[in-house]
Amino acid sequence: MSRCLCLSEAGAFAEALLLTDEPKVKDITLAIVICTFKKETYIKNTLAAISQDCLLQNKDFHIFVVDNGRTLDPELLKHPKITLVPNINAGGSGGFTRGLIEALDQNIYSHFLLMDDDIELESESIYRLISIYEYANSEFAVAGALLDLHHQHRLYEAGALYNAGSKSRGFGPGALTALNHNIDLRKTDALNELLLEVEPDYGGFWCFFFSREILEKIKLPMPFFIKIDDVEFCLRIRKGLKLPIVPFPAIAVWHQPASAKNLNWETYYYARNDLIAFTIHFSLTYTPPLHHFTLVILRSLLQSNYDQAHMYITAYEDYLKGPALLKNSDPETFHASILKLSRCYEHQTLAHPLLGFNLFARWLKLAATARTQWRSVTTAWKDAVPEMTTTQFWRHYLRLSDSSSQINN
Image (cartoon, rainbow, N blue to C red; front, side, top):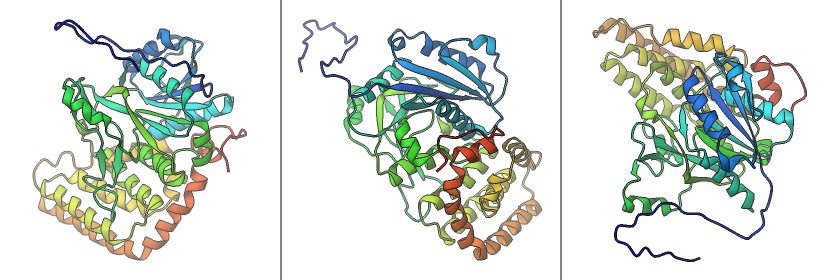
C-alpha cells in the first residue's frame, strides 16, 4: 500500500481509487428489486441514476420494479435492463417478494438487492456492492447504510440490533437499536467510529444485498405487509444460518428516517409483526407482552390518543388469531380495514373518560382470554413459517398462477 503526501496547505482530498491485480473469485449476476407505491418521481430518478451510471454498463444486472400502486406508465420505463411488474398492494414484504419470485423464475441471478422506492441513490454504491462480492471468498449479507434525506451529511444508521436491551421481550421502545447512529460525516473524528467492527442483527430493506444461496436456505419473507419484515428475514440469516450481516457505510442511500413518521396504522403493523417475529425466533411467554401492552395502552389513553390505543389492542388481538389471520386474508382488503380502524376516534380531540374506560376494559378482557390461548398460538406461529415462506404460498397470496416454483421445500 502506498501513501500520497499533499505538499500544499490549501490542498483538499478529491477522490480515491482501489485497485487489485487479484483475479475475481466469481462473476455476479444481480437482480435489483424495487418495491414502489405511488412514488413516481423518486422511482424515475432512481432508475435513471442506475441505468445511466457508466461504471455499471459492463455489469450484469437487471431491475425489477414492482408497482404495488399500479400507477406507473410502462412507456416511461422502457429499457432493456428494467422490467415493470404490476402487483397488488401487498405492502413492502409483498412487493419485494413478488420481485424475488420474478427474478427466481428467470433462474439466472446469483445475487439480489432490495431497495425502497423513496430513496435518493448514489448509483456507485451498486458498483461497490457487486465488486465486493466478486472478490468475496465467504458468504455474508450486506446492510446498506441509511443517510438522513433531510440532513444529507448525517448517517442515521448502518446496521441495527434487535431486542438489544432486554432478552425478555422483543417489542416496544428500544427494541430496534440503530448502529453507527446519528454520525455527522463532516467531522473527521466521527468517521473513526465507522472503523469499529459491529455485528448487526439486521439491515433495512431500503438497501439489502444477499446471495441466491442464502435465499434458497432461508426462503422468502413473511407476509407482514410492512414493519419488521426485514428484521424477521435477517434473523433467519443470523440465527438460522449463523452468517454475518455486514454494514458498509460507503454503500448507502438517502432516506427519510423512520423516526420522522408517526402514523397510527403503522403502530398496528409494528406491534403485531414484532410479536410474531419474536415468537418465531425466541421464546415469548405470556407475561412480558402483557406488561408492555398494558403500559403503552395506558400511556396512549392518558394522552387521549384513542386511535393509538385501539391499534395496540387490535394488534394483540390479531396476533392471537394465529397464522390463519395472514393465510386467509386478502392483503389489499385487510390493509384498507386497518386504515379505517386507525381513524375510528380521529374526531375525539378532547379527553373522553368513557371512551378510555371502554378501551381499557376491552384490553383487560382480551388479556385475560389470551392466557389460555398463549401456548397454542405461539406454537402455531412457529410451525407456520416453513409454509408461509415458500414460493407456492406467496403465489397464492399474491393471486399469481400456480406455475412451478424455485423455493418450495
